[in-house]
Amino acid sequence: MKVNSWNGWDPLTHVIVGRADGTMVQAPEPAVVRDWPEHGFPAGTYGRLPDDMVAAANEQLDAFADLLRRRGIRVDRPEAIDFSRPVSTPDWEQGSMFGCMPPRDVLITVGNEILEATMCYRSRWFEYLCYRPLLGSYFREDPGMRWEAAPKPRLTDASYRAGFWEEYERLDFDEQIARVRENNLVLTEAEPLFDAADIARFGKDLFVQLSMVTNRSGVEWLRRHFPGHRVHAVTFGNTHPVHIDATWVPLRPGLVLHCGEREAEEELVQYFKVNDWEIVSAAPPARSWDDMPKLCFCSPWLSMNVLSLDQNTVCVEASEVAQMELLDSLGFEVVPVPFWDVAPFGGGLHCSTVDIHREGGLEDYFPKRHGRF
Ligand code: ARG
Image (cartoon, rainbow, N blue to C red; front, side, top):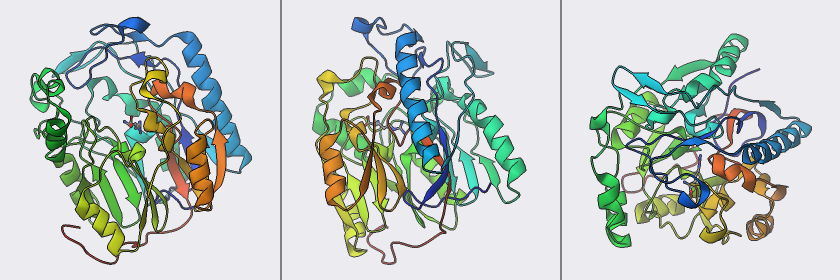
């Protein structure tokens, strides 16, 4: 057993896959807006996702875990805790927790280190507990593993912009994108905040999306924490940015998958081009916003939330035919995995996993500098 992973494409040999058990529509809090009156959860209400949805999601998660195991990959699973419990710190009280489906949001492996993210939702403050049994066992089994946790945030009201959602939802698209570009969103800069899933690993370069769940001081904390890396803050033309892995997805050295409707900054595009990287636009998703699963807070672009098993092999949601064909034409072996029942629990194939071990070492795939990069 060894912790080691530097990028999103080297051969995967050990991974965590999340669980749907006990997932909640979380109790209201400043950073989260949920409003599903037609499915029993109008704004302000909260509770467990229905049992039939949990069972369907767990069936797909278990099948995905089995598929990975059949390919020789070690798969570990988190331990759900009672997410319906109210939680508190000296600074706040929160009516419920959330779940442990998207491990990608909470943990990131960089080399021999596993880092627990700060998170920025009060409902997700304690989520690291679901992974502590695994992290403790890795720490015991692998003498080289570095176990780190970013400073637990206070998450007082000072960490959130008061009245943000009412104000923001009244803006038009261009005004919202202007706010996204300057990261003038729900989080203030009161303290470093980031979700692990806003980080995309490309060897020596870590691209961190400024988003609804990651602020500038979060990126600054990561920059000081990983002095051997180039840590870049990036934004995309997405009005509700949460997690980079349905927007800018590394596939193999020289190839990144981009959600074309979420425009990348020109400087980022040029940085990839001068370093001979190809930027491929993801295929149109199979689903429209209107036929998303109920209680889903993700977008149809989960279609591009793929998991690479190695440089030539990629797991894609089984109904995303156009995405599978695109990857096939780029020379990948595509492994179809039915997964849309998992979406309401927080994401797709990439979100639902955390790499613990991939073969290979730290490499510099961007030898040339460009602009601020
Ligand atoms: N917010 C993204 C979208 O809807 C989904 C990304 C989810 N990723 C994750 N790691 N949970 O486009």
